[in-house]
Picture 1 (cartoon, helix red, strand yellow):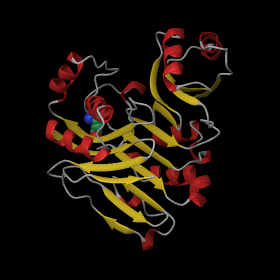
Picture 2 (cartoon, protein in one colour; picture 1 turned 90 degrees about the horizontal axis):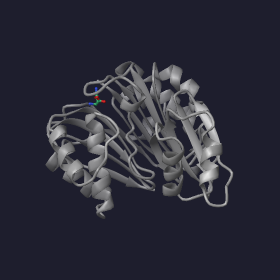
Picture 3 (tube, helix red, strand yellow; picture 1 turned 90 degrees about the vertical axis):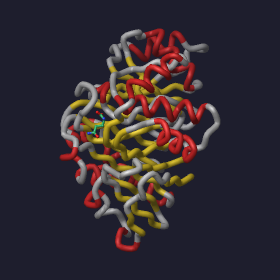
Length: 297
Ligand SMILES: NC(=O)CC[C@H](N)C(=O)O
């Protein structure tokens, strides 16, 4: 199983409601993945203020903000927000500088999300309990997604949660399993790619990140993924301005897309979309096998 929800808001009047809409959607997929949940939010100006980078960290030591500030030029103000297993650090510096400072300050910590617009939360436990821990209903912004996990390929722990956010403002969530991920992992590792987990979906995320870094757009990157990976998948991939959905060539895993003038949404099951405002006027369809659907901000 595993459950996916994603919401891309076209109408800024809905931005203050993003968290409430996501939380209601999450209820519809919680039982597809009771092991753990990950949530990603784009455009919440309280959690990731304009002009700042945010880095989401697992296994963060208590004094991380002070140590990180001391390592950054000019000792800028570094804020921390702890939510369950995830600690979010923000600072008015470049994303790479904040990641490097976290790595130097806490070698045992793991960065699981980063960007100038993005905040990621991950944890093991029931999705609805963790949604409360993350304050999901209070979230604002223009785009968000969540993944409820029933593990197939690696341990049930926060590291195994989706989204895999392995490039600035990028996220990938996956329902399914890749059968040749070990081979692709070895090829990417030979090219210098470093992995954080044993999870198959991380390999997909690292592959997409490498394609985007080579200059592919989201559609091209996901078509290349389809040519390279064997197995089953529904994927939702998001970037600083994009939202993309793709299913494998035999559409083994479920997905429903709803498109409305005010928003675009996808979920593993329709019931997660049923309470969206204006759902009765939305164009609702199952994505065709192997076809990449993308939307830009
Ligand atoms: N049930 C699923 O879709 C699992 C997704 C992925 N293979 C994982 O183990 O995390």
